[in-house]
Image 1 (tube, rainbow, N blue to C red):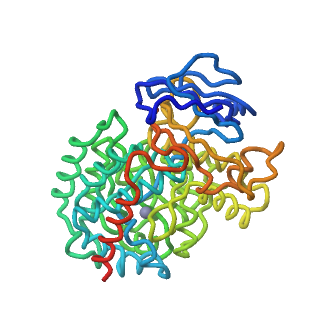
Image 2 (cartoon, rainbow, N blue to C red):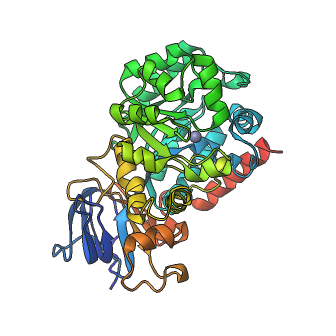
Length: 446
Ligand SMILES: [Zn+2]
């Protein structure tokens, strides 16, 4: 049944995904038990039970699940080489003891190796779009790696013009941090056929001056930061600013529909209302929050307040995997552990991982669901693993969230380009990526 005409589908060709169970996440949340998805010129052209048109290439999706690519609204590609190097510390010790010294030691070739490894893992596990925070230096390498890998990425250098125990190698002046961010935005925003976008990334309140935060807010672009991840961090913010973290961010003008805050584990009812009123998105990172012992974010309450919530794996050293499937499952499990078995449904988790992420990235009109006219970011997930059996009439949302892992991701299409085919990366040579990562990590962690 599989008809392969071209070895690699370029965005200007047409591609038909034939006969899979299509989970659209469109406004009606339609599911086609057996349906087709037609892609033309990098765009979704038709979705339905049977698309009659011919295509340059047809991929047989019989027995598979076809869905929008996962969107992760908080990752750190630059940290991938530190996976397994900081496993047992709370946030501020973790940052000051290992992660900041690691980032300060990164050379350009290290950042390249880390970003390529991160992109490879993300694509192979079904994530097609990310909001990424880099380190202070060598951010060009992150964008170049994303361009090569084929992933859709909003990213920006970390901005750090203040803070206790920040290594000298990461300390910036306010003007220098803004100037380098502006240069990078000019260089990369809109590149790679629009797949790359710039996001200003003040790391968190404890490493940013008020002047910096106000200047970032005044620029009007996408903003990506961390907030209220850990109780000690919240106490330090209160001591430094005289108010709670989210209230302070509102005071400096940083909340709004273009702002994404990772974590928001410790937010008061008033702060949750502020996030909702301003349209600020929260990137929920259940795996990272659990591993660092930070806590469990009040996702049920955030959603009830009307906050847009997305998911993210955060970095490799605090997770330690970058699988959107792992985060979806954990998100449901942790909310149910604290709020009961009806707290979060599998379908809601899938919505956070797709539509929520798309909205957070400012791309709600372009990605996050399978609808004609949107960009073709689509994944094909095999459904023949023992953990998924017997599939039968199971709810596909349940199968995807509770019973599917990264290993079942078969094909990954970003902007119409097949980046993973039959579980193999087509855009980067994985053995080379792994070898470079190993060599750089050996030097960084002798
Ligand atoms: Zn983070």
